[in-house]
Length: 137
Length: 301
Image 1 (cartoon, helix red, strand yellow):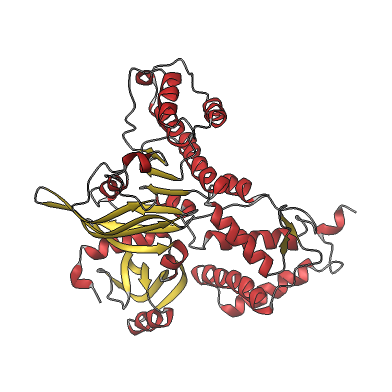
Image 2 (tube, helix red, strand yellow):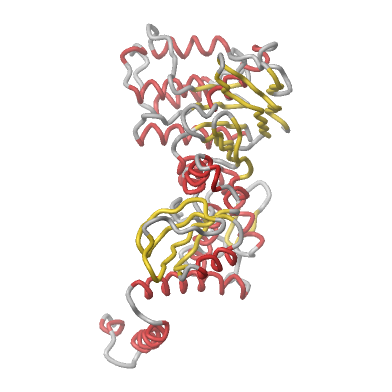
């Protein structure tokens, strides 16, 4: 499982694992019913204490992203994970905070950013103009 | 299961120098305990008490409920130990070292595990200990420390001076010790990213005292690091409430602080500044901030 741990950004390690597994599931890189690595395996891979993996898997179960079968392992839940609104906001707000900080450094106002977000959104919408997305087809 | 180590109010002096001053430390089964602190903070002295190498002058030390000085066999047969110096018998060959160590642990020695580690480290069994490189010595010492599958693994600065490959072997051994049977690990380290990754609990020692101790997540929760920008430059670190450490210069400063974010925002605002971003502090930042603070007791809130 493709997870990277960063101990320089201050986010607790179990939370980094939770966030990245959620992302892997939401983006379809982990499929419903797929088994997550055993605790020992992931702890060895990431070089973290096994109890951190236990804690991360526990959080994923509470969030409905994964479930465990006694004596076998932990699996990705069926269906798209339903994150609580608060949780979804939190994830996006972290990104927004980072964006605003960067914008501030580069002398863009919040209004500039809002306008740029709309422009990017318009540019990404299919069929508006000649888009790179159409080239392959 | 249950309580593995109980140290209560342990003090120790070497001559007139106090090495441990009222130290209490507890470890429960299945957890990893990281011990951090500068050289001379008392980490090694504390670990030596657990091994019965030093007798508690005042206070009490219990390992598995036993006194390691009065019952060394009862304690040491269930403990694995690797020290920074990695004292090994120089004249022995690696395979002799294995047989020698096995003799102390006849019933518990896991020969399959020992062989597996020997092979994965690519250690030559016929090589003499004195001819081993620093990394190989650590690997040989590590096998001797874990192949009897100890209930308690004690590692004193195990990564000190080692390259990334051998450091990884040591971290793997910690993971296996905990993951395979819920055994307990206590390790000291200068490498705070290693401590942050591997520890469930962290204990910070400073000048013979425990200055911070608890579950890693709990310890970290109380500290944040913010980037702050002021309208006017400061040539001295500006005075901010709850700030423990500051670095930077001119208009931009990085601040490690405790307490509420709101209070911090207010004190930055009062000096004509703004908080550009905040995040939880890393263990390294907390450690450095606490160490710096204790040198300036006048700053204490």
